[in-house]
Image (cartoon, rainbow, N blue to C red):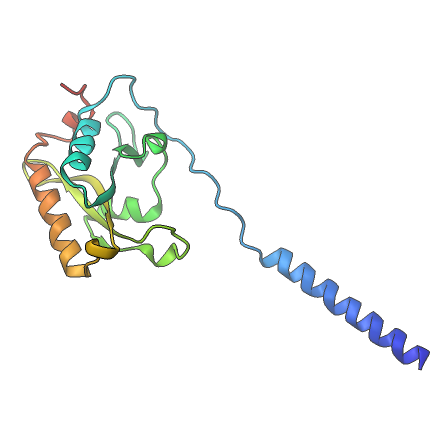
Length: 181
C-alpha cells in the first residue's frame, strides 16, 4: 500500500509540475509599451488643432487619432496627433500601416480587445487631403452603449461623413505638420 501511495503521490506531483510549467510557457505576456519613433514639435501643429476641434464638435466620440509618416521621415508610421497626447509619437500597429499604405477601411477592430472596459466602436479610415489623396489614417472611437449604441452601418456613415468634411480643411499632408494658427 505504501508503494502505491508513493507512486500516486509522485505521479500527481509530476502532473502538477508539468501543468505549472505549461502554464508559465503559455501565459500571455503583458503588452509591451509602444516604442516612440517620432517626437512632435514643441508648438501645437495644425493636425492637433484639428483633432481637438473634432473632439469638441463630436461628443459621441471617445477619441480621435491621426496617423502617418511625418515629413522628412521614411517608413516611420506614427500617431502624430490625437486625443491621447501621451501616445503621440508612438509607432503604428500593422493595421494602422495597412490603412495608410493601402487606403483600406477597418470597421470595428475590437475583436482583439475583449477586455475593454468602455463599450466602443472603432472606425479606422484613410485620411484624405482637399484634393482627395489618401495621406494617412484617421481612427475614430465612438461611444457604443446606451443611447449611443448603433450598428456598423450607422458608425460607417458617421465616420466617412466626418472624414470627408475634415478633408476639406487639409490643403496638403505637409500642412498638417505646420504650426497651428
